[in-house]
Length: 477
Image (cartoon, rainbow, N blue to C red; front, side, top):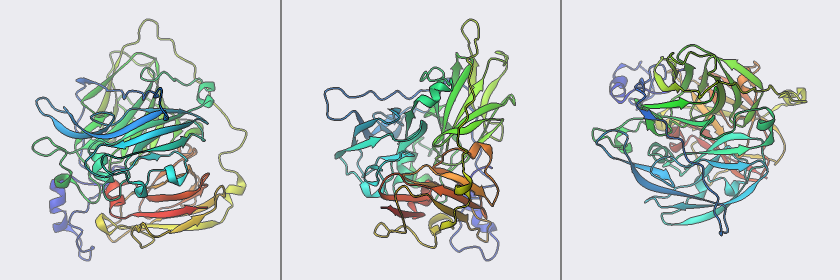
């Protein structure tokens, strides 16, 4: 599974080779089977670890998150204009404890409106930070966030209508953790920045002046670049000082899919998906994440030769994050327990529920729709009762060019995948999710329950498709 788009040069000739009868105006459409390759990391920069956001003291709010302009030196001798939260690029990691309620002051110091969306957090629609919640330049507000859900790796980013793709492209994104007792009882690594590492994978394309010139570089089918960033670092490496490492991986790209492997062919263990721990740990040798999906994995380095090249690569074998193995003294492996649940991930009753909502994803570029319609902020597309599970069937309708992969995201809920084309989901999808990769022609059934009331978005998480109106609204009452 390779992604959604071609390079800018490939785009320019795409329209000349289209089959007769293709949709008019599709000259910039990207072929998801022929994606711009990423440049390999040469491992010259130690990976930047986002700082943890400190709680405020002597204030009526616990945290403050500020969207601001800045500059970043990605390349020697050049300064690139960027956006960031509380800094020049990306943002600090926000950690909440399961069951904790906090107030967060969000402030916009950009020269354009933005929003603060808490992706994956099950909060009331009024606190969700969707396109209705724009904050104008120079303004701020205080939102109340309650982490009333299992431990999970979530994230935050802007969701301003028709501006999300550009603002994320320029650097607005940060990690959001919900932490709970379940991870501690399983013996998982929990020392942030030591053996518990956030990894934000993104790709970028720069103009001739090494700027993130979105107006010039964007593609309406999903902007993809050849420069690989991990936590905003070009040519990163990570020095590993613990034998067992936990990596919380976010695909923070606008559109690219990532299939991640280890360069030495070793297996690793996936322990969590978007919304928390899987039903049981899954041993694998690769994971695929579409835009906005997360995965937590454990890598056991204790049996690897310290002189052996070890790196996270993509499906082409391109090195994205090389490791320097530097255990201090005796490498004592930390025991990680399996866990089981008294209840199956999906009960027979849940599996037998009838389909109550049907969603059809279709199109490309600025001709994308959901159920034949583009987003209208004044229109409620669906209604669902709070706390009542329903089955949504999502169909990715192909077009006469074959269609595109669409990562489908629902705000305000962590759903369960019931089936893909009638088949049980793979073990690594038997965990709570808020985003799901859907192939052209595929039908995916989801068990969706909203724990809070409000109006929530559902949309394709190719950010350019979202901005082009591939989005709907569900009112939860």
